[in-house]
Image (cartoon, rainbow, N blue to C red):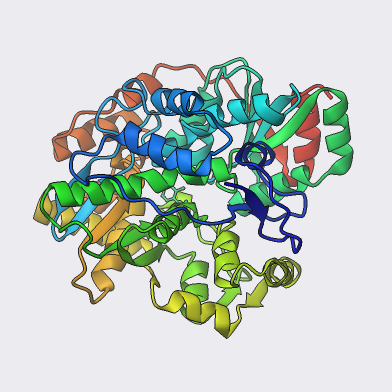
Length: 489
Ligand SMILES: *Cc1c(COP(=O)(O)O)cnc(C)c1O
């Protein structure tokens, strides 16, 4: 399988290793596979997660050996990283909830970020010329810690994480600031997530900085969901979730389902779209947003407009105005016309808005729906789902639940649960009718454990004891200077 950039009119193909090593294309586009391989497991019953991951990875990583793929998959989805089932599916009311939060940082980003560093080290060994890889990450909370955990002490890699000061939950911040490892750095930026993300993109495009990097034997790469190595692992769990729906007798093999995904950067739902292209029977995809409903508008009306107020909500990982991965989806909807795709993105970047052509929109109208739910509705969903079913949703998954509830549909539903409620105890407790004074994180966790009747995840109990190891802060304009200092360039 070869990969091309969404903005390259020539469509010059490169290998998977090269696409993963580069992260983003030099023309600012994102790498996509040249085609979608068809895949159907031999049987839907009792799928083994690692076997499934091996099969699907092999179709996309044709320049990796079977031994390499086995190594990557076995260590990424080991019983140490995922002590329980990797991605269990539970029935709650009329939905099947695919729990994607059983990894080391209790959010779905572990599903990809346990695999990416391993993919990247192999990719660099194949085509990187022995340079040290410096990973730059912009995070709205969950990616940062998941990437830090994934890259911590991986030889040949360093990682620098930028997060919006005051824009992540106290637990998310503590998780990041307590990360060990000789190769990790964490920086609080005086701005919001989009500032961090734009800042990181600027660093990737800074040729002077790149020259200094190169002279010092280093090169940048990305662990953000723009890296194809992030997307690939996410395809696997949609197959796995479907298999569990078949195994539990909820659906017949081949029966169409709908997949509901609480969305931010459009990575998670894009992986579901890729699975659909590969033949997984997904009738439709539902993109759920919070108050930051830029995707709802573009999917419903074709108007992509980021000139709008930015809301900080109880689902911070979805507080996003520019969904990077939507570009990959647009590329497909434009019939793989890179020129049209590049032109739309240029208009968006220059003017802050772009009208997507009617022709492109028609392509998604049959299978992609969108809706949004505000914080109050999400909180109400957390309360009512707990009352009716004894199950505690996190605020992100609750947005998905609420949007699903608004849809008229009888299709069997797979809802992606993107975070553990233990990651957002204050918002969850408030939704359950327990308002706690700020600053008592440990009490909040204990109370949530008692209420939900589930044990506290060990990763969180340990967190209380860990010392803070990172304290860097910087202005948006100084991100380049900060990188220069950290790397002693
Ligand atoms: C990152 C994240 C999302 C959004 O996922 P995208 O792939 O960016 O759309 C939703 N929920 C949680 C908990 C997340 O961490």
